[in-house]
Image 1 (cartoon, one colour):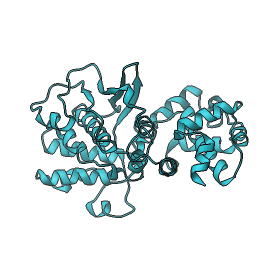
Image 2 (image 1 turned 60 degrees about the vertical axis):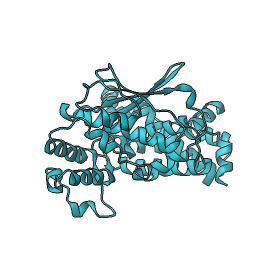
Image 3 (image 1 turned 90 degrees about the horizontal axis):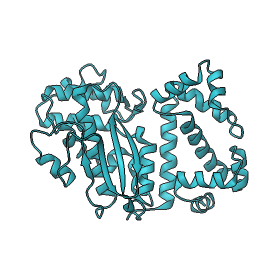
Length: 337
C-alpha cells in the first residue's frame, strides 16, 4: 500500500518537469493544484508527498493527452543515484535476492504509486505490480509502467549480465510498441491477467558486482532511520512504534495495542494497512533497529540481544537477523568494528 502523506524528496517531480519542458508543457501547468512551486522545489530541504506527485503526474498526462508510453519514458530517466541512499543500499547488496528485499522493504523511499509484491516458484521469480487504490483509471497505466521500467533500469545498473525481465501488463496493447521493446529488451505481453516482471529464480543468489557487506549494512541502517523519521510524522504507525519501543523485551500484542489506542483489532489492521504497513512489519522494524544498536553500541552478546528483544529461541533471532542483513549477527558486528 502507498502511504500518500509520507514525505519524499522532490527528485521525481524534477524528472517530470524536465520531461514536460521537453514536450512543451510549462511547470505552472504541471504543478496546478499541488500547492508546490518551482522555487520551493529547489530548496535543499524541500519535501513533497505521493499525493502531490500524483497531482503533477495527472496534470502532465492530461496536458499531453494521455500517451500510452509516458510511464516508460519517465521510468527510463531514473538512475540509482536519483533515489539517494536507497540507491546506494541496492547497489551494495550482496545478491539480487538481498537487493530485492531492500527494495520492497523501503519502497516508500522511492517515487512509486503502486504496490510491489514478490513471489517465486521452482523456476521463476515474479515482481507483482498493482496500482494503489485511489489511482484514477487513466493514470494506472502510467504508474505501473513507470515502476516496471524503473525496476528494469535498476536491474541493469546492479548487473549488466542479468537477462531482460519477462514483462506482462494487464492494460491494452499500445499504439506504438517500439519504446517498450527499447526499454525492456523484449516485447511485453498485454491484456494479461497480472502486471508481472519475471526472472529465472536461479539468478537471485548470484553475487552482485558491487557488493560490499559493510556498505550494505550501513546504507540499510540509514534507509531505515530515514523511513522511520518520515513515518514518525504521520499517522497511526507512529503511535504503534512508540508503544513497541517502550517495551521491546515484552512487546505488546496487536490486540493490546488496539485497546491502548482505542480501536478494535480489525480497525487497527485496516488503518495500518492504509498506511502501508502492519503490526508485524512495525515489530520487525523496531527489532531490527534495536538489534543493531545493542550489538554495536551496547556491545551486548548475541544471546543478550535476542533476549532483550523478546526472542525465546536464539536461532529465531539469528534467522531474523540474517533476513534483515544477509548475514548473521556475529558477522554483522565484525563488519562494523
